Length: 115
Image (tube, rainbow, N blue to C red; front, side):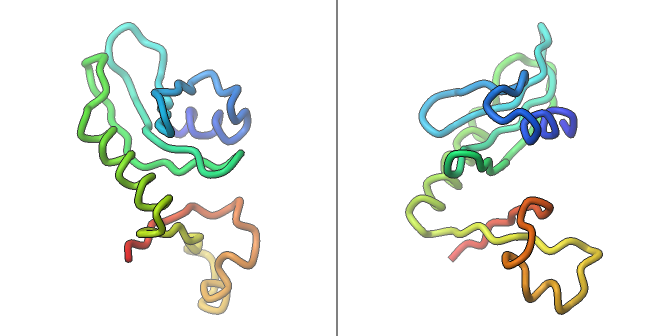
């Protein structure tokens, strides 16, 4: 999964693992005949991606509940019921943690804060 996410970060829409599932929903999927790893996410703006759920399984079908979870998060963010904030890194000092979002957001993950 890490390799797929690195490829998405490096290549964006040209990622070899990227598959558009419709509407705002996307997945990263290893190209195997049976099963494999899948990461479900939605796009945020032109170049942002919010990874929501992931799974590894033998079957070659996505788990519907995970897809619906991803859509729920996307809808909550769109409607303002949830917001994404930069996640401080463990090596950040307490002072840095208070400044999350004012520094390099590209090196932090995003966490969802539900209202």
